Length: 200
Image 1 (cartoon, rainbow, N blue to C red):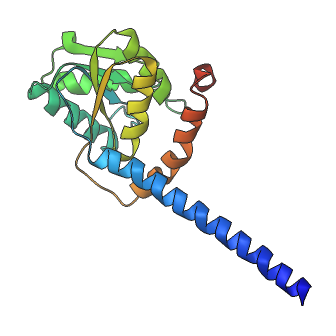
Image 2 (cartoon, rainbow, N blue to C red; image 1 turned 180 degrees about the vertical axis):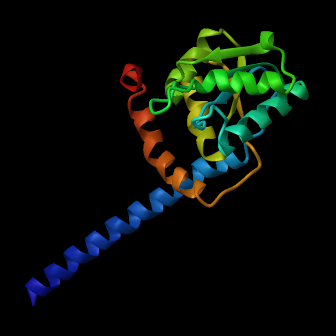
């Protein structure tokens, strides 16, 4: 009998531990989602458009195009005076995301002199460092809703005093997967904030 009770007690502890983990995970993911979905851009010195995939022909894929459209709108509305496009050179097709983003903006009426091109924004943390190097007092991160919280954190941690966020008002079911990925990636940034070189 004691052996059976011990087994049940062990199972109960396991169930409670799993339940607690689920609750904490839901709260954590919910916080990331709410932060992004409720983000509102404030008038700032620069809007930072985070890069993502382009086609082999050098055309922004839908998610990136939506970010560019959002950045264009913020510039047209006078919310930001400059736009920084930050992205990587993609390994598989060697396309420079930032250059392609800058070309898109120029085609849509943004003067080249107000566009800052960062072709070495290989990850969110590096983009944050590059924005901070501009000595801009304020910035708007422009990305998808699930990425806003980490992008804001990176810029603030890098030294940008005032950071707000904006995201394209489009939603895809596939973005829920990216929310889960953010839930895992964000703690890495927090844990390594004392040694940010790990993220480079």
